[in-house]
Structures are given as structure tokens and as C-alpha cells.
Image (cartoon, rainbow, N blue to C red; front, side, top):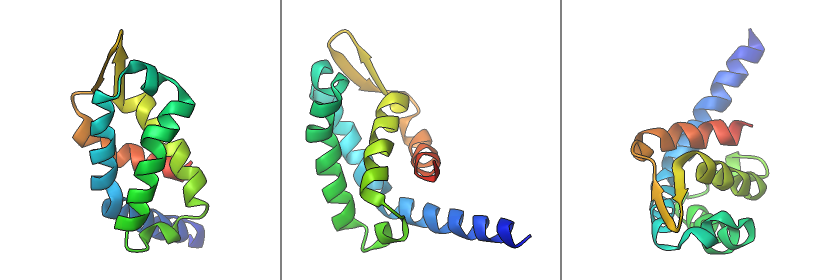
Length: 115
């Protein structure tokens, strides 16, 4: 019972933290469409062009909410890779977001940060 309550409280805190920075992540992911397939496919290029700038923007915009998430910087890098894998489509040399991107983004963020 106590474990279930702790899990519910931590999930609520995580969802609140994600809500504070989800618009920033959305903005940065929207920009991947202009980067080109080569940059988005390559982990190092993706990290330098998308993950790092998004991380800095999220930390600045979150008003400290990211501090409630242990090891946030490492987790954020993994989250951004998961977002790329689940929400970004790379076809030939074009990059686009899945159709229901705005709907799926919050749940993918929360689920990826829980892992």
C-alpha cells in the first residue's frame, strides 16, 4: 500500500515536471524537420544539434522542476533518443514528425523518464 502511494506521488511529480518543460521539447523536436536526415540519423550529430540545445533550454525554462528527477541530464539524453525513435520519421532525405505528435509527446516523455 505504501509503495503504491509513493509510486503515485512520484508519478504525479514527474508529470508536473514534464508539463513544465514539454513545450520546450516540442519546439526543439519540431526543428528536427529542417536539419536533414543525415544529422537526425547520426546519434552524435543529433546529440550536438538537438539534444544539447534542448537540454539547456529545458533546464532554463523548468524553474527548477528538473531537479526533482534524479540524474536528469543523463535521462534527458535517453529520452530525446526515445522521442526521435517514436515520434520522428526519417524517409530518404526528409524528416517529419508523426501525425499525432502533439498528443503522444507528453506520454512518451513521462514513460521514457520513468525507465
